[in-house]
Length: 228
Image 1 (cartoon, rainbow, N blue to C red):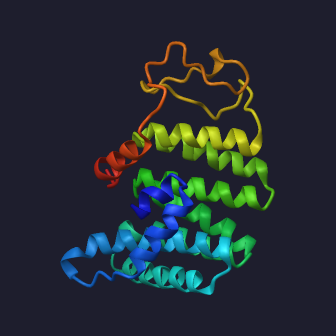
Image 2 (cartoon, rainbow, N blue to C red; image 1 turned 90 degrees about the vertical axis):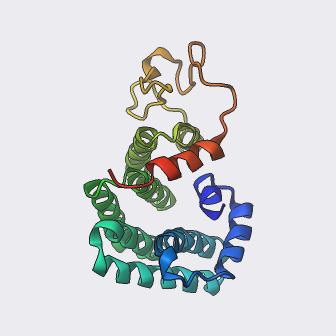
């Protein structure tokens, strides 16, 4: 639930679920895979919460997740290196270490791509976009958001992809028809050149008015959350 709230940016629920998560420690080695996933997303949530609250407990929790991820990456760089880079980038963001953050986000994206974790490549791109938006590098932010949008769609999380499109329009303004940030149909085909400026065209779109985003993302986590 913490993961889904984080992906959907439902921050009040994310905070509540994160507090519950950190009250419960997984110590069973048979649950190692779930422990690493929980540590990863728990760390990302912690760094975000620190930037919102300046509460040092969140920075400490994020740092512990980062230390654990670096340790795991020593045993399996393929599975954990990109996660460590992304957590490290988020920590640098928290510390206003702009140059380090720039380099680490790029490493997180490129390593996730190299290791074929498409969902975490998308997430790294989205978080990089948020960072560059915050530091007023809007062109770079747009580039990362475009990559995230495409990779979420490739992963099968169409609702998340579309939600990101809407967020970018709110944050950066209406997108022109010649923008490479597309708003794909469920069949994967883009119809952006058939629309008015910045407005999705649902006239021939079989997608229902409201998509169950939680169902889509949960499905993606279960069915698309592994490397291929």
